[in-house]
Image (cartoon, rainbow, N blue to C red; front, side):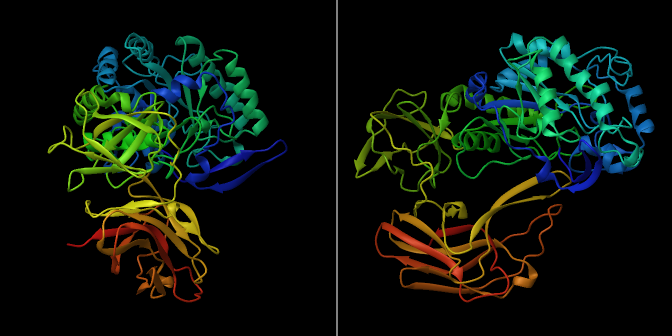
Length: 594
């Protein structure tokens, strides 16, 4: 959805061109965290994003070329002339669109709010706009406004409704942002664009479609903080209860949106949202069949909820107004899971117990939900750090209690021979008293009852110059990935210390998952645990480029022995002072050996 581009920043006295990469354009800050209307948003947890426009008619092809990645960017990628691209509207006739069907599928999927593109970067309006004739009513044979019935159908199903609107990028307009292949930058007047199209269209959306719950802005630019605030204030006068996403710019949104396909590594306070698309593209691409399975969606949803956020999953309908068959099928499967286990998602907060080898947790007052992704080999599920009084533990939706026992602060649950859902079976632990919040606890659990334990460096204790850094990179165009890595490890003092709670004695293979620049390869590093030492030399994986895949290697460096269960510190560090950083460590993996 968001791509590398250049944009102009309008100042009060002059316009200058500055280069911006995509992470700079993902405005993640929110200033209005006290907005009382955020209560419904925090509880909703599962939203549906819909990207639908002229690009949906093209389906990833322009002239004789096929494009992979973000289909809604095809005009930009093909550098299609605005006048020629506009002709696509002449054959855009989505007669297969059925508002009641769309809302019905969303309801079956367990969706609580829906956001659809009113205007994406191509500049085409998917509603009846009086500001321009370049819209679905005036420029297409369809001659109808699909947004009116869709808004009504969503409300009938109890689904909150909102619009996506690209406020700055508009490749159709001479004064809009982004189109440099048709329109000269020195001739652009961003203020005129905001005055004559962007703001008037936003006011249309906030006036003509009933009460909106969200306006989801995208790609801020061309306005100072003061100008952005003035725009927001004018829009709030129309609908004071409508929430504005953080991509309105300058940290002035009501809630935080992270980058495309990004989940924060640890729980985050406040209202926030993670956005993912169901396959590799936001807009429809006929040849993109890389859809996330129900298992992937269910685990992604529970992972985001375990960190306190919402997941908004995108579907890209085709040019006839129909959803991909896999999206319908897999969303319905997700809805069946939510029908059984939705209590562990909706209305929850982040998990008070950090992620474990078996899965993640979510919380409500007096309840801890245990999302079991991986069943322990011995059938004994250990929940560490429980200081509340446990009343019962059950499979959610089943009134039969499970057997459990307490040993110190560990609660061990005896699981049935087979779990109802191997994608994610949820247990609910009811308790009385106060349960301590261990969500930020650095100590990570290691157990031989699972094939491997993978530990992110965000849980390490950093020494010297070592720190974490988030790396953003892409596979296909716009298919963004994000990884947190430990960096700046040049000297032995720049060490990472991983506090571990090892539940079983035995031998464990240590695997380092890292990226290493060619110039930094063959440097000596050292893994230690007590008196045990595992020396290694780094291996090259390649140069980091944010618009190419970032390559990592799983480097097995040796075996450590654990004499007895308990707490240990595993250290990773350079073996000597180097001129280059040792590597970019994404995770430490401990594999039990048998």
